[in-house]
Amino acid sequence: MDIQELIQSRYSVRDFRPDPIPEAVLQEILEAGRLAPSAQNRQPWRYIVFDKPEEIRILTKKTGLIGLSNFFIKDAPVVIIACADLKKNTRINGKDYYLVDTAISFQQMILTAWQHGIGSCWMAAFSEALLAKYLGLPKSWKIVAISPFGYPKEDKTMYSKFLSAMSKSKDRQPLEQIVQFWKTP
Image (cartoon, rainbow, N blue to C red; front, side):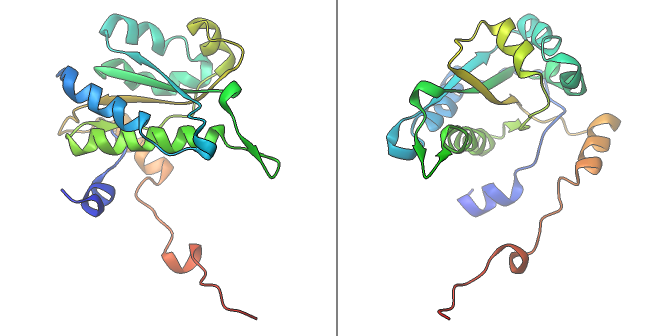
């Protein structure tokens, strides 16, 4: 699959088969994140990988009230929490780049996973304070996102269909609304 097919076919997966992700494939996914570009090559990303079903089930209860909407992660064979170490942040023109850098890195992991038929779902619904406390994170770390990883089930649950419809997952703005070509005045 070429990169355009990969980007166009990827979608948020919320229904997972129990099949484990082979260790070599998981390492390739993590390596894709490691190789991402970052502002001034600071590489602020830090990843916490959950790959044991009992630990993933406990994790689902540690994301706070808002995180309960993501209970579907309990069925994924792997959950990765994307964090950023603020000690590695770059601040340019008054902007912190740890979020951008970590997002780029995590997206590379998500696309690499999809290349292997492994779905994911970028999640921001969690209590950062509760989750950071549970994980015992250093004070300089910020949680950027969470994503389950696993092979998609063919049949989607009603809950999954509802979330996709509610978030309008497939809706994309046309290029004309998001791109302007510069014309010298």
